[in-house]
Figure 1 (cartoon, helix red, strand yellow):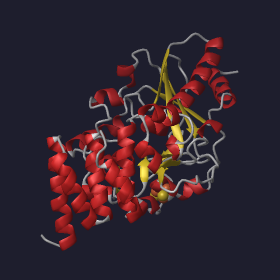
Figure 2 (cartoon, protein in one colour):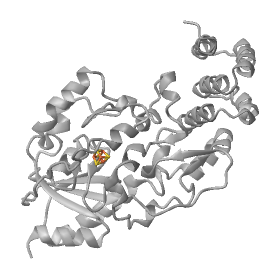
Figure 3 (cartoon, rainbow, N blue to C red):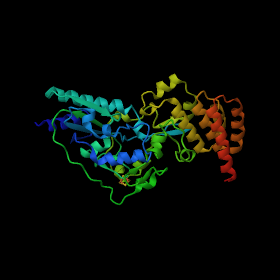
Figure 4 (cartoon, rainbow, N blue to C red):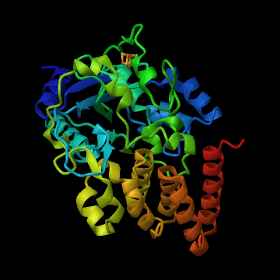
Length: 375
Ligand code: SF4
């Protein structure tokens, strides 16, 4: 049996849904796009700024001859809802166990089996590698680019995690696949923040998934569009017809047994660090820490605009985290301007952090202008 066929068969056995192969040539196609994103300040703090490292496999692994690219579906069939009163959404990518560990585990099993038949050198990555994994996936025929810039596989749709193994093995490449979106523009229309600025033109800084992870102060107008998202966002993928026809995931690890796909907002706002670690420590979405998720819970509460949440918001105005106090002020002012003004004016008197104090004053002015329509 040829090595390529052997790898494909073993991949299926270890639970890898999709596999493709590509060469180690520079990813020329994407260089201009990446440069343009830097010039337009559409690059996030999570991305490698050295473009050469993002497009040249040999810079990452000098012995590289070919790349094995894998796709694992996380589109599990799960429709239960938790009973919490205040629910905040977790995107499917953070359901169940941390995908970094799950995908790495399957890749390690594949490597172990390949090593039984051939000696080879390799370097593997899931999400955290410098190369543009979607471009590798497109080149290797794992899927095609949708207008929302996701990689879409004909069988599994776009809810797939991508991993790749740079190897010194010489393996024949697969063919890339052209986009099959046709005239459809559902994802572009569905995006709440307009992060999809056009077909194949994505502005990550407006993407709700990015906003739920950044520690930068989120513009007020974007907070309003985040709805009840606590981590990640699935909107453009859920709008995509290719996902409604897709095969569901076979990976049980991604079933959200603990959270059922939602954060209990009330619990999250009052959790200790050890309680947080115990409940959410193995969730991919916990990587930015408790306070970022607490902040997102406050944005969700602000967007709910329910006066029953005022006592909870008043408590959080005195939280130990400066960032959390700031967003509690935003949420209470958004929920009820009159109650909010009094509560924020009270805490400003005792606020010791100058930045927080200034932000609270800005918020008072902002909401005053908004409520009274002052220009
Ligand atoms: Fe393509 Fe339509 Fe899916 Fe967007 S929603 S990725 S345009 S098929």
